[in-house]
Amino acid sequence: MKILSNVLDREYLKHKEDYDRKAIEVLQSGWYILGNEVESFEKEYALYTGTEYCVGVASGLDALVLAFRALGIGEGDHVIAPANTYIASIMGVTINGATPVLVEPDEYYNIDVAKIEDAIDEDTKAILAVHLYGQPADMERIMQIAEKHHLKVVEDCAQAHGAMQNGKKVGSFGDIACWSFYPSKNIGAFGDAGAITTNSAGLAESIRVLRNYGSEKKYYNQVIGYNSRLDEMQAGFLRIKMRYIDEIIEEKNRIANYFLEHIQNDKIMLPKTVEGLRHVWHQFVVYTEKRDELADYLAANDIGTSIHYPIPPHLAEAYKELGHREGDFPITERYAKHILSLPSYNGMTHEEMTYITDVLNEY
Image (tube, rainbow, N blue to C red; front, side, top):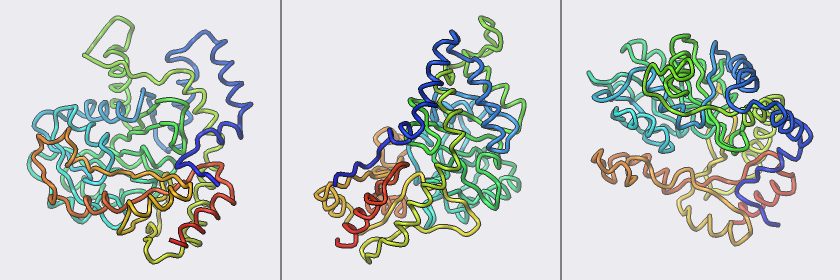
């Protein structure tokens, strides 16, 4: 049996008629940028996340860049950010000229909230919270810290669609939240797509202007902006995906629970979860001392894997000017050397799950 690290077409095939019908509908509408599909999706996604406003943009990275820009965070400002994250989170800060101040993760792979206050200085303007792999960061404590120090909070929800802390959805805690709808996400488009959610009318309006060349009215440019618009086709597909989001999340939880129950190998540390949080399992990440050996063993048994992520941002060549060296963030670096993402995708069969666990238990 051959199992890829990810399979995207099974979710499409399950609801093929709905997606095909929507594609034809959009094509026949004659309106392809900032039309009814985008407007409708924005209303529906704001309602789903429990926020007042949603603004569709071209990608998750664009959402981050525009969020910090709209908050007025730039040159000379510091942003507290997790050291253990995908590099796009940090790019959202640095593209605006601000400096990321990195904080180590906890045992759940998210920012260690107990270490945030020690990283705050007189130039700190915001905290960036990333809900890595689908498990929420501790937003209640982060918001308390932010309020105490008068800081803005940006949520990177790219991997956590539908995740919750004590019944409240991520993306509704901070001042502004950034979303990616990259195809592999739980709410994935069929290409690049992103969005911003917020409860601030002013921030929402700023994002709408920034995403469209800095103009509210065509050809009347108020500021230097971007071309970052969620297109009608992707918005239409996302509206279809939204119909099935609870089903999608429930399936990801079933797969995760099966792995948690059936993988029994003391060489493999399973992911830990926090009580009171709704994990949506964008990735199922295990920890092992000999990661490359395990990955090679699984590959020899026709099981694909991924690493999220092999090089932490502070050691990336792109950020050598930040002056960090190996050893600066030992917990983050240890994770990068020892974590492995197992296949976990919608449409995975019971036979595939059984095969993966059997092979892992024999390792």
